[in-house]
Image (cartoon, rainbow over all chains, first blue to last red; front, side):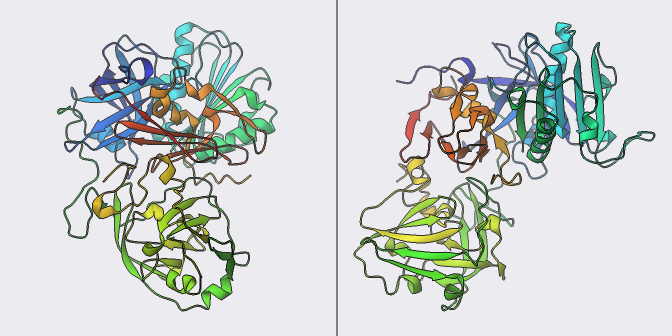
Length: 240
Length: 200
Length: 96
């Protein structure tokens, strides 16, 4: 007989508490999950939807912040032809329920106990799990330097804009615009290049986390390794 | 479990005569992959037919293109629930390739350049039911859809239509392939909804 | 080597949920030494193709097959390495 589900493999019922727009296609969703065991920055959950005829669809979403009791925050970007993300982003009613499995993943995580400077590289909605790291770092009052390099198409594609405009101690936010920059931005628009990595902490001391679409992740991981960052200190997560 | 995810229906599943159970129609042509797209060029391409005794017959790209060509139009059905109507292919009927093979085998294993394999009964790839296709919609088959050449067996779920095919191996015993050994149905008839290993 | 970024969308981090019911420890931190190219990579670093019709995980260095996982209602099929023959695990009943 299979044992009853427990821990991270259990499917828990999660009730949608609130939905808040981040960008035109991106939303912050808060769910109440009874008996949520807590999670680490960088972890994700799998969300399962069930149609009336029993058809199920499962997709992964990153946790965007440390848990507050039984409340968890997800970042959901509606994919143009997606089956699950447009439903979560715009259709699921407040107060309705989905199933959530997690917290998941022990590889792409950061905890305040991890010593050394922190380098975060976000491409598009790849910001979500890195925001969880930034928030966990702020909450812990970490004194280690931290740089977030965030590549977005244009200013209106920036998630968590207000929070990022107010950097915490020992924290630097670099916004890289690939298509359209705000007036006065000295940087020419375009994808992240070696020059955007200038002035970062010494390779070998800093932990690097890279999250975004596959092309972004591969490109930044290559830039970091070319700059001398050892592969052991580079952790990546690819989004579709 | 009712009340979960209200208003979620998955993709629209219309009732159409031509739609096998559990499928939805799509205009697009989704790409599903098990690995990097192999770069196969026609000048190094060969299709090899191997019988159960080990005898081989190979065709170069030019030799294959010189064989009689057919233009089948068929509905295709993917086990991931999309169906696509009236797909137009050009290629060589497997009847032509199997014509001179001396064999007592009842099964074939399709083998691809990327290491993918899938098994079929011989009778399901003969009598005008299967093609070695090199064109789709009038154009050379794109690499992500299996180009330069793939198997097309429209009456079975599309995982049986191996992309980047490099040969067929005739076998006396049935030899389940890449997905058939990992939980998918051994035969894969979409009309009987034979998706998983033990579906009737 | 032969990875083309356009073709795969996921990495081994995405295996955490599907494999959670059959591993007592988080599988994404498990280290694999590729028998083909000797590259060391955690499960989280593998290149993953899918999720449909199944999750196919490969060495990030040389693309050799590392594992296949197929999720079906009530079951998980898991095949490690390049060989044939998967193990079918029966999953706990839903709604627990």
